[in-house]
Image 1 (spheres, rainbow, N blue to C red):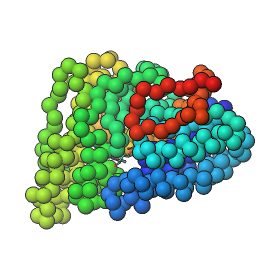
Image 2 (cartoon, rainbow, N blue to C red):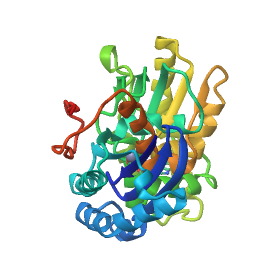
Image 3 (cartoon, protein in one colour):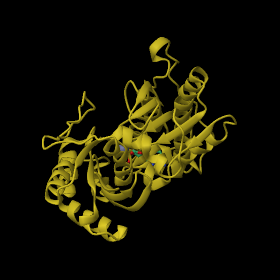
Image 4 (tube, rainbow, N blue to C red):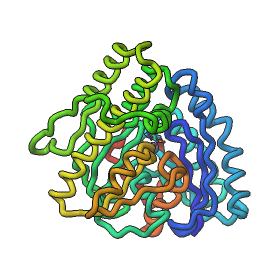
Length: 337
Ligand code: KG4
Ligand code: ZN
């Protein structure tokens, strides 16, 4: 089964062709990063506008790269939740028109489930496992029991992990996206130079939750204090210390989840899963088998959408003409024709 996967939930315009849920025939990703850079963050209206301009070209390139004609496609899958609604609507509108023209099914895909599925495109990983989803919009530790089912153990109570990276970098005037820049800058710094606060572990239902606003404020105060002083070495030290603390917060909760569930397989996804320090730390845990997708599959991409869609389509799920886009994950029912 050849499934076209479309991803336009944020600032990546991506279309992929995936065979039988695993084999990536093409995965074209057109990133808008350069356009959003001057604003140090994604501007929703600009994002939707660029998706509208780019999506046809990205689609055509995905067919060329896959070496197929559109008549060979069996279904169209599209991210339809959660994300920036204006951006999602471009993908959803395009997917529905294409599916109607080709006379093939269309299916809406949850962005979070797609990220949690992404590592399956590279290694067949047995369920259940712990999913660590860390991106600019999401921070989640989940028990993943199938491609469709997961139980959220912990989430952020304020900023997402990637958002904290982006905001610290923005405050610093380092550029966008902050995660990549801080990751790189940290390599020149001492991660123990500054001791930033970590939120205390919550009890009961909240024991896996994380919080990043305290850390973000502590780091920006430190930047204020040190700006222009010891300039040569301070930025890298602050970046490295911030990164260490951000990862410590995450891994502290993950360790608890591993102890409590007895699961030792961890599958990371989302943009922050590309972080080299996070990977290094996870790899140093002796009893844990950690999987993370390669860099292009960590950040937003159409392949994870086309990949997971195969499993829904195989069990008979389809969406109808009323498929729409939602900014949040909400109670959602597939319609069956
Ligand atoms: O998954 P993604 O492409 O989009 C969302 O769904 O949010 O993730 C983007 C986020 C941004 O916050 C970016 O700063 C962060 O992932 N990111 C990183 C790294 N690469 C991207 N954060 C830390 N280290 C990295 N190497
Ligand atoms: Zn994402």
